[in-house]
Image (cartoon, rainbow, N blue to C red; front, side, top):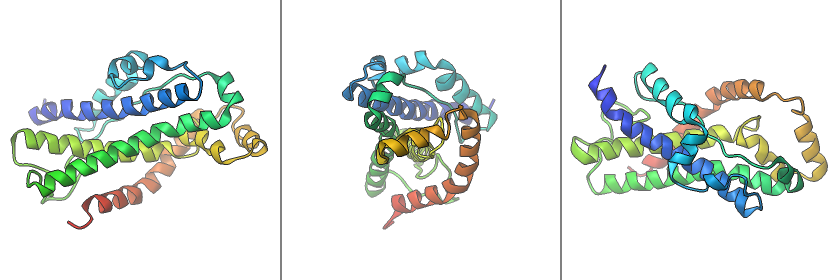
Length: 230
């Protein structure tokens, strides 16, 4: 097995788990603030409660997908429970709970971008000479700086992608539940009526097709902002 691949796995997994944990903790916190304490155990930045709830999606699938693709990407998932009765009684609060997850991802991406810019300004990081990838937005020759450059690159990339993907307004993604934040009661009922027979699996398949088309320009724009002025 490739030694370099094994060496980068912990950094990839740390960034991936941090991203999932913050996403689900934000959902849970927004729910609790809105009056639903169902996901109280998930209001934490400790990844263990999230791993215990979804061990397959938070550990097994990410690690397997990482090796199957030879590094350079991970897929996986986590979840935070909620009370459907509460969501029906307070649809705006439920929509705000859904929006909190992507908001957490974009916040992490911004923090990673700030750290990357500081590292460049301080001379610790360089731009990659041979073109960028998700884990080489910046590079460093060796030591702690090299690992930190990879971690921050992955953290930025994952959170731009995860936040953007979850905004697609199709079930079971957050974007589907966020739409009612901008609708009145009549339009909200019609919106949810469109998928009243389920459709989560179909929605996920369509979301991946849409994502493949919209993500490249979105990520290019994010990289442009990251490198602006450099």
